[in-house]
Structure formats: C-alpha cells, structure tokens
Length: 199
Length: 252
Image 1: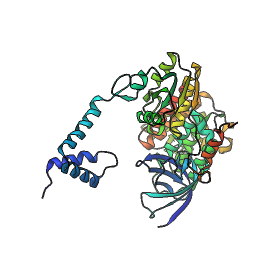
Image 2 (image 1 turned 135 degrees about the horizontal axis):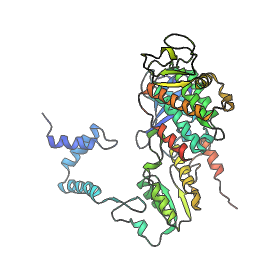
Image 3 (image 1 turned 90 degrees about the vertical axis):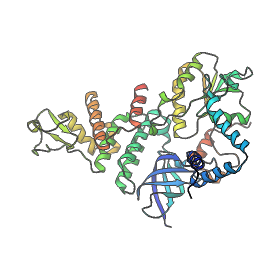
C-alpha cells in the first residue's frame, strides 16, 4: 500500500535536517502524526517564527529578535571590551558562563583557505569600524583553538595592531576534569605557556 | 579486522556529526586515506590536537583493506609545525601545499618518496626565508614525483637542445619547442632560456639548500606564471587556497 503523500512530504523535509536519516525521519513523522494537533501547530509556528523574526544585530552580527540585540542595547555592558567569536551560537555558550560583562562581535565564520573562505567573507570591516569609532580598550579573540581559528586570530591581531587596543586570546590547555597523562604534547605545551600566577 | 600503523600527514578535516570528524591523511605506507575519528570533536577527546591539518602524526587505524572509509584508533603527534602556524604567510603556503597534494593524489596510491618530499618541504618552510621560491620547487617537484614532469631538456618535436634565446612551451604536450619547430605547433607560452635553466635547477635542487638560490625578480614572476599554468593544466581548475594565498601575500 502506498504511503500518503503528505506523510512522504514531511519525511522528505525532515530528512534534510542534519543527522536525520530515513528511519529517524519516518519515526519523527509518525510521532507528529499521532500526537496532538496543538503540538504540531506549535512546532510549525516555532519553525516559521525562527525564519521570520530572527534578524542579525547590526552592531555585533549576533542573532536577535530586536535590532540592536539585547546585549548591544544593555547600558550596563562594558563597551570597551569586545569578545570576538566565530558563530552566533558561540555568544550564547559564553553568556551561559555568566562571567563576561563586555559586548560581542560575531565573525560569521573563520578564515579557511582549504574551503576558499578569506577575510573578505567575514565581518571584519564591522569589527574594525567599531574599534575605529573609539572607546574600545580590549579585544578578546575567542575563535576555536584550531588551525582556522588561530589563523583568523593572527589576522585580526595584524588588522587591529595599529589601532592601539589591547588584543588577547582565550587560554588553551588541559580541560577541567581532564587527565594530564592523556593530554597530547601540543595541548600540554599550550597549557604551560598559558600558566597563571598563584602567588 | 587488520590494524594499520604508519606515519601520516593530516590534510583535511570535516565535521561528520556532533562528535565525529572525517579526516583525510596522506600516509607514508598506504598513500591517501580517509578515516573517521569517533568523538574527536569532544573537548576531552583522546585525539586532542593531533588531527589538526598540517600535523605529522604516528597513526594507527583499522578497517578492511581497500575500504573507502577507515576508523582512527590512535594517533600521536610527531611534528605540529608550530612555527609554520605562527605566521599567516607560512600557514597559507603550507595549506596550499597540502591542498595541492590532496587534489593531485588519488586514494590508496602509495608513494613513500612523495610523503618524504612533502614532509621535508613543510620542515623547510620558515617565516625568515621567502617561501615563494620553495613554493615553485614544491609545485614542480610534486608534479614530477607524480609522473607529470615537464620535458625541459630537448625540443619535444626535433629532440634538439634549443639554441635561441627563448623556447615555446605547450601545456598539452608538457614540453618545450625550439624556435624552428614552433610553426604549426600549439605553443601556449614562451620561456626565456635563463628561466628555463632555473626551472631545470629547481627540479633537482637539494631541499636543504633552496634558500641559497637567488633568482632575479623578472624570472621569479615568469616561473610563478609557468608553474601555476602547469598546475591548472593538470588539475583543470583553480585550487581554492591559491587566490587566498596571493591575497594574503599581497596584503602582508
């Protein structure tokens, strides 16, 4: 017996999502079909709202419902401190820590020569303009500690060197709860380089 | 399932899922392979920094022989090439080198000499010396090692050593034409005899002595255009890393 076309359409659309294969898409589709109508409507509305109401903040390029975003429009935030991150979701990861009181700048990617992504594809002009507008004392570069993230950090450091702002990079080393015995030589080397004074 | 043990250079890394990575290696004993590193994206992953591109590692992987995808079992860093990574210019040159290696080689073709040459080139790459000449050596030698060495000694038509001040070169025939043989042959570029001598020298130069060779600016530009067109003719496309390399070199 042929499956109803509306159900096939839903399976096809769910299969487009990352990490969802045929079986998972079928399972999710039958779950939605069997569930309450109200839940399906809520899911549908949530997906539509994400596409319609989310915009990029004109200042930090983070995702927001209001422009400028809550962080950029918060008067209690320290605007002299900018934390540079790769992607919009990195802002929320750092915000969950609750320690950082400055503002953010989202690059919307990293320099990746093997993928053909150069500095022109990132929001570096926006970052430079924010620094040149004055009032910025420190830039914290929080790109991932990988080859692309490090190359982007070096590029930003060169780009903003002439502006006289303090440039710093997030620390790297052994993760909390990790074991030194199993750490690789490069990670240990970075941990020793970035050691902190306890006196 | 057999375990394979070899030294390997990490060429490329793709995110396969929330926790896994798909890594392309160029190995000393088994040529280019692709392998899945389970849990490599986790912050406490046992692989740590060893799966970063440009890293030379001691690799243990498993899977059926001639299978397209293997599984990484263990890897230890042999050389991280930190000085190469610390400079934007050398980092971009190194990435261009591995991009070229990845594009020119097929999976499973073993070539220990090529592996040795690539790892030696990365070791020779330093921010203090102009990497442009090393880049020319790399482009020419990698083509030569893969069997695409341009014929620069004698005219491909008459077999004579050219006596004029310049020669013609055909990227299709991969060889030079002396002036009398040019008529009716599809010659795409002209090379000065001086530049031709440099080309021959670069094909045989000891990698430990490359920085001692001094080439005039004019010949350097001619060499760059020549090797770039040679690679374009072989690949049939521009590598993504090449225009970015030029952009970075131009700006810094």
